[in-house]
Length: 101
Image 1 (spheres, rainbow, N blue to C red):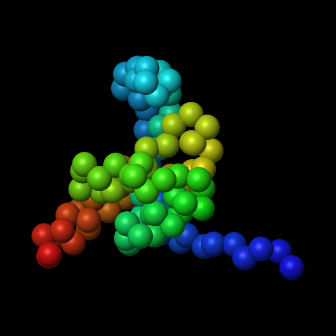
Image 2 (image 1 turned 90 degrees about the vertical axis):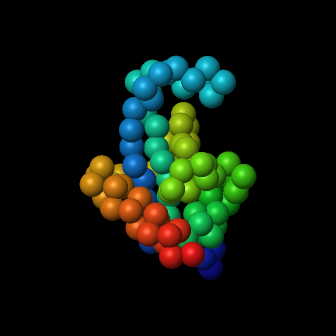
């Protein structure tokens, strides 16, 4: 019997381009970068990250939308990306949730 696959219906990906070199990460200006985030919860993001070998402490929580920064080989973890408009809508949703607390 094959192992049970985890389902992550709400992990979303936003592709963008490195605006500058980041030598400590071996990222060059123009490289493809991806923000991986959940549109429902940080716990969902942590579970997804763990299933792909990412540590919870690598989540960038400095902004309104907690996310993993994927670069290099990590970009291969991403699937179809969201548009900028979808990203903005998700950011607004996260900000609204924060203000409700």
